[in-house]
Image 1 (cartoon, rainbow, N blue to C red):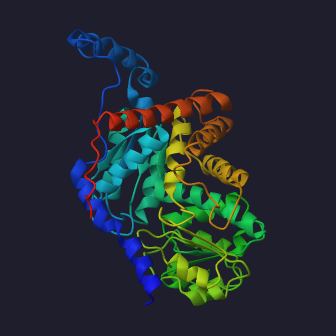
Image 2 (image 1 turned 90 degrees about the vertical axis):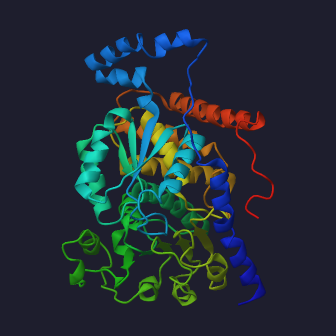
Image 3 (image 1 turned 120 degrees about the vertical axis):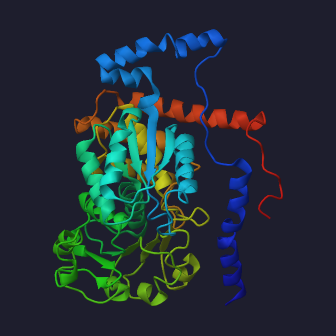
Length: 447
């Protein structure tokens, strides 16, 4: 191992040492705070008994009043059974709590959404579906998180059909939206077209399965796509996938019946999108060397990408992206889910469609394009907070266009509303830090 490689690996691995003591210092990442005035204890006659009774009776007469008289309009449940947490696998609901709290933190800071981690102690599909239905009166939306396949598909499909509020699975729709945004701009940067580009999708889990459908809806040709699972390229010659969720994809893709693994599937490919298992040797340099000129590689596995960026670049990659924030071009759901939910909540959408995700992704891609694309900047970063109200506005507009919104707002109204809510949250956090109510960690913490 070279000195440079050893140094890069050490830098990439530092977070597993730093993170635990920071989590322990704050004992969690989110808390509930009042947002109404409490001028004296007399105000509890308004907020609680006896005054609250009338608010309850109003909602009993008209359930839509809950959006006006409670925080339902801005509440989202982050629900998980902990069966597929990041790259850690089936670690259970309680061990998944740090991730769900982190999700809630990002929801609030980047979308102004009040999100609550709900970690379940069941892995049974029917029990999960019932649990989510039971908590529906409290929430304006449901974010499903880190459910294993194939049950994640059934849970999402059932709940989207059977619940009156938006339910989405971030590992499916969120990943697909951000992958699309990165794909749009990576192809533009290398001068290739979506409908002509050849794709290799490594991994057939929830992320790449939904990415396939979203890419197709956005203009990619299924005939130019080959998907690869742990047994190799999928096609209609693979009788082991007949009757599974992979079969309809096999019927649309890989028309030449390519067999073999990643290398065989990647031959002549313009872009490889990997959402499989943590690396770093899932994708090898020889897999990249057989791709077309100016190859694009998205290695999205966390916490370790399928191939390290510096290894991919030596193999000839033109544009490289990962799921990590410490490398350029982070393909991360956090770029889209706070904004998509912000837009959906603000128009009281009944669901979140692929078309709403595409609208969000297109806005995200355009923001980066307008700033100027480079090999290390095909997608904005999370600190460019302007991207969130922009996406929220486009998401809300698409929901209205599709007849899924309960209320109507103009694009400008949506943008201003989202901007105000997000900016308020960020100012409150900064104020609490300045005043010492959010304590600064010791300078040597994590060292």
